[in-house]
Amino acid sequence: MRNGEIVCTNHGAMFAADSGLCTFGPCEGAYLTEVPVAVEDGAVYLADDRFSFVAAGPMETGDLDLSSDSNIEF
Picture 1 (cartoon, one colour):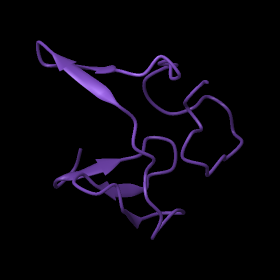
Picture 2 (cartoon, helix red, strand yellow; picture 1 turned 180 degrees about the horizontal axis):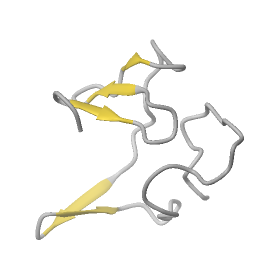
Picture 3 (cartoon, helix red, strand yellow; picture 1 turned 90 degrees about the horizontal axis):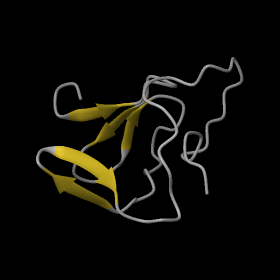
Picture 4 (cartoon, rainbow, N blue to C red; picture 1 turned 135 degrees about the vertical axis):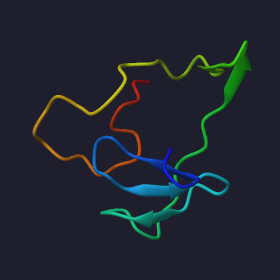
């Protein structure tokens, strides 16, 4: 988070936290896909079995995948 916006560690894009609107970066004008989450004891967890956590931080590949699901496995 920076100045109330979500910062993508893959592409440096910035997203409005309340709407998911990309306000800066290669996806400007697009929206994040909503993913169900649960908060327990201050930690955030995925709340949909169709999604699984892969890793924190940027992707290790040099290939840029500008889709919003680059770090989500189905």
